[in-house]
Image (tube, rainbow, N blue to C red; front, top):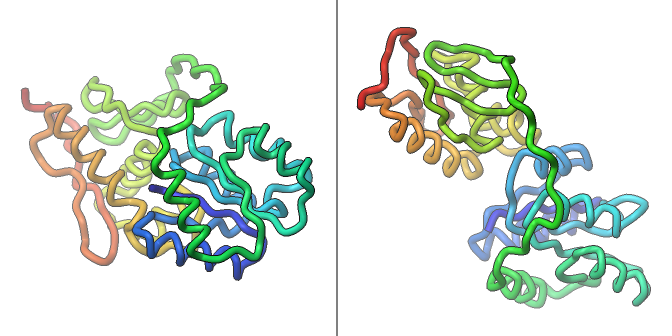
Length: 241
């Protein structure tokens, strides 16, 4: 699972991160409230773990904000909460509430139990953006800045928001290699992530969609241990069919 962790107490955040990574989960530890929100806006996650203090003044409202746009499960960690407050969190959409301090094995078991459940439905969604004529062109790639769509020679690549951001970053500087750290910061706002853990799956998906669009040449090149770059995009290159 891809898990986003938000905790004001650095020690607890790092404990949770290490624990979940040891269980073979992909984990992102939010460095700030802003980066936490940005990640949720741009990425689909399987589980959100947030402390009651990290959530701000209204914990139920913070849970609802996540639930509005994500199908992710939610676990809230807390130190001092009354039974009524815990009930409010569960009513707002939290899947579990865990009291600090917790035993690592118990926390891991709770996450495993959640992982076995089917994804929760999205209870509310934002209206779809209207079509826009605001385009940015890079060779045969065209980016619709309003609908976040990418077209190759008229073919919609059906990219996710995250894939759009990655491909847009590569297209803006095609010919140059963008480091993992740069892309992680550009797409998710995390300056502390310097590896390709989050990027690999999205890069693979983008490559598959480019091939499906009929592009015969490899456009995204990998520089092992460094990052990714976009090959030269010929203006007159026509997808093969």
